[in-house]
Amino acid sequence: MTPQRFLSPTASQLPTTYLASTARYDQMPFRRAGRSGLLLPSISLGLWQNFGEADPIATSQAILRRSFDLGVTHFDLANNYGPPQGAAERTFGQIFAADFKAYRDEMVISTKAGYDMWPGPYGEWGSRKYLIASLDQSLKRMGLDYVDVFYSHRPDPETPLEETMGALDHVVRSGRALYVGISNYSPEQTRESSKILRALGTPCLLHQPRYNMFDRHIEAGLLKVLKEEGIGCVVFSPLAQGLLTERYLEGIPGDSRAGKAGRFLKPENVSQQVVDRARKLAAIARQRGQSLAQLAVTWILRQPQITSVLIGASRPAQVEELYAGLSFPPLTDNEMAEIERCLQ
Image (cartoon, rainbow, N blue to C red; front, side, top):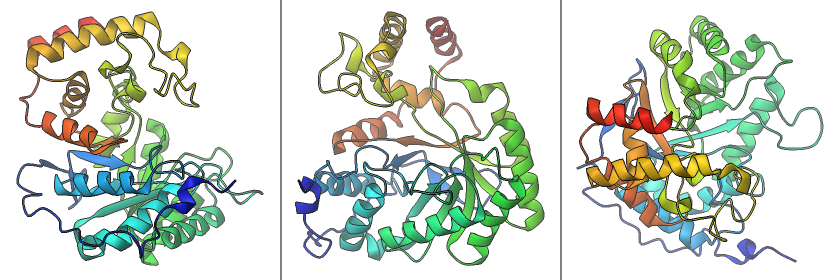
């Protein structure tokens, strides 16, 4: 059966009356990407799981419009985002053609390659063959001449870093990307990648790791490397797949990611220990007048090395909530200490 998504409007049929809010830059705080000249909004929109063929394109369009109206200028994709693979880039391309062509120079659009994308030995990992071919496919799906940032999505244990980084240097020199970055690399791999790219004349702009209150592995060394190398940091999974929201405080809703037994969040991940910690954190958030999700983002942005927090959204109200959370004051020392006690 043909998926419902293919019955959605084409780009030429989507409404084209969108005019961005003239107040879009009034309140959004921007942060510098490492030692580069590029500024990114404190929150960016990731098109990971909610822009595939099963999602109404009208909802995707509403999310993108509302995000841009609030000053979210950075939109993050990857070749395999969907589902299925490539669907998020196609969705974005349709909406971009209808709404955002006039605003291209105000947008930072990123994509990645590294995970399994097509059959055979050239469809994943970090070879020059795969990375350049994948980016060409991504540009076609999105209808773009270039992306602002192209990432190596994961390190390849079999391909020399010199080849992977050389491919990143090439996509910049060929005009396919303005900047390059890496994702899911260890501190040691990050330092070596940065060294290679610097020697080639194409510095590493960004590293994209997972980071949230329940997963703090980047504090063990990566943040220090990024500071020393002058690399910015855009973090994903800030809400721990919804565990750092009020979503699971009273059980597992049937329509939630854990309730649907998804690939990335399973019912067993919603343990009593996790729920107990989330309840304590929610109490701290209430004392500040915030939601738990807003507190989770405030906590991440306390780190000066963090450039932006990648949020996901299935409806515009979720973007509005996290945007509103940016107006709250930084965490005090006492609040930080209380959070640390909750996380023990």
